[in-house]
Length: 217
Image (cartoon, rainbow, N blue to C red; front, side, top):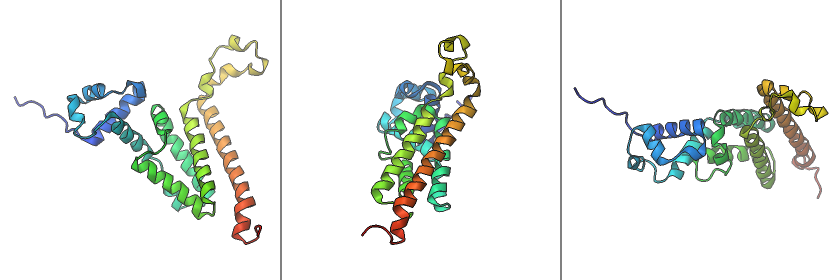
């Protein structure tokens, strides 16, 4: 009988398998040897598609970024676009939290990450924000979203009432873990609203007067 044909090895299959390994066991668990074994190939076969492990990680990270909706910047004003983008960005990261530390290093040479940075920055500059301020806003938003995806506030509390007996203001803290989704989502929504409200106030104070020609000078 003919031997079963092995699935064709390509970049997409390598990236998907690497992401699955990272999701399951973390960044530190990914090695080219383990990845090759998961793909049922020899290690050198990977190098026909990626020169280094870092190139594989870049491709994995970019595949996550590529799922973020940046079309919102063409369809909404800058505040609503930032809101919708932040939610889409967080959703992508919370599905794959183990890749977040690598993503947090910045876009590097990754195409989807650079396209996302360009979309955010471009929308802010078009709205009238000075380039330096647009850079600050993009960075602040990324800090906030990535930080919210790195862990869970609610999951940090154990379900042991006795542990909090000496802390009177934490007498309900043992219940937080059981409400993880609502606590973490509520905290993200509150923080996002506060951040965008502050930016809108800053925009009204510093950008709008200049656009109307009523600024100093």
